[in-house]
Image (tube, rainbow, N blue to C red; front, side, top):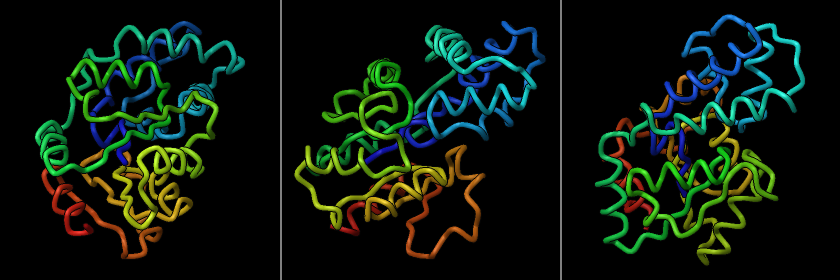
Length: 215
């Protein structure tokens, strides 16, 4: 089970540029990329809420969210790219008959379009986005749904992510977590939250070894 942003793709600049585009529409000053990226992970509505608060913009999320989504829709893949080694990793896992699914808090349509743009959609027969009927991560509902679709038990499931949200999701769903330290979300994972039973990787190439060691 893969997360998207910060795990499969580096989308930092496009997300930050889109958030600042939204702020500019309200006449607000831009925020730094690093500050905006630190707010990513819980879905677009939460990101927009956090950005608006940080910028001191008093406007309803119902008004700001469509502005952000429209801005982001125009630049989904301007700078976004898969992390180096991701295509090779996915091809290796498919060659080994590893069932793969995508669980993200990003809207489904944008997620699928990003996967398609980089030739990654074929690896994920099951995708759950953050704007569907299921609660967003860290709720376990999306994980449970995807495990049912793939006919895989929790003991045989690994969530590959990069953030505190992914860590909490894995624990809520009772699955193993593999945290990508190369992802931009890992910087905000409190060291005290790690129990020592997590798998930690510094590159996509290491993920294959983690998964096959658990088979």
